[in-house]
Length: 354
Ligand SMILES: Nc1ncnc2c1ncn2[C@@H]1O[C@H](COP(=O)(O)OS(=O)(=O)O)[C@@H](OP(=O)(O)O)[C@H]1O
Ligand SMILES: [Mg+2]
Ligand SMILES: [Mg+2]
Ligand SMILES: [Mg+2]
Image (cartoon, rainbow, N blue to C red; front, side, top):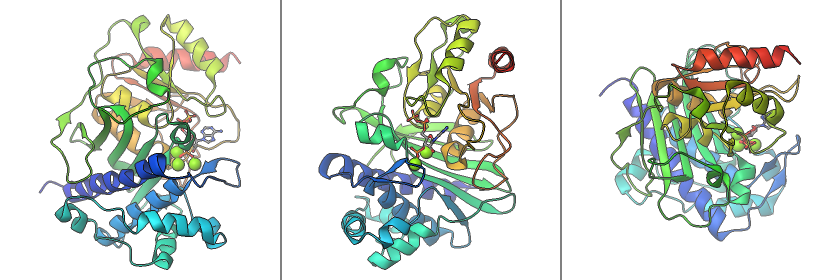
């Protein structure tokens, strides 16, 4: 077995199992949405997915720390919400019993579920093995039936080493370039659901999501691009998450004529890594907002291994060793190696002229 192959397998199966739950929430349930202290939404899907993934990590790697987006505070004071989540978590399992066994089987009790969610409370840092978990990235996209991703990455001594992104609403087929329709409501599951993975130094892959064991994978790589004016660039749906006006100015300066593709979540990183798009621009809207490590860790290693470069808006490598946030970085620029320098120069020009 190569280094990190067990970590990769557990992460892939754990993400795959969590997506069984998030899809059940989307199709069968009231979403149980509550507002967090920063006014952002969280649903029973986010809590349930965090519980299932942390249980799988703790079963296999009991010593590892976990930086998870959610905590169980709201559930300890809201029995109805807690019971709704437990109802889903207790009988969500992979259809392949060997794969389910690898993840340690079901969580034992509702109390154990709350404690498991709270194991995502690591403060992160520069030493040792730390998992970064976003149980639903793009919660707003999830709620509106757009793109969302279940995101898990292993950071070793501050370096993102393993990354897995489960994107239930991306098309399995990657032959077409993405366009505006990709970010819109996904009305059915037909032909959708992709699991992206990478291990540092070992390349990036994708495979169709399944509800059992892992399906065969294929290598992915960014699209070769020589004429930047033909690039497809991705950005957030929410204007509050990245500066659409600065991004439009950058695109214009680069001579990009195509309309940007707006989609929620790290599905943006996944889409450029498989060559369905070319660039991802995420310029800061606020002086004070610090990007969260779970919003980027998996995407960064997947794009890096697919032949891309990811930095912040000023060309600095994203530093995952400083805790739960990327406190020394502002914004994100992700692009194929060949055109990154051209883009980075224009990003700095636009930001400096403000
Ligand atoms: N002000 C601000 N600036 C930048 N980023 C922010 C901000 N506020 C929230 N967030 C984080 O954005 C995550 C959603 O990812 P995207 O921005 O790619 O999606 S979206 O298109 O805007 O919905 C979202 O992740 P989830 O909470 O997991 O959905 C947030 O962590
Ligand atoms: Mg959130
Ligand atoms: Mg997120
Ligand atoms: Mg989230």
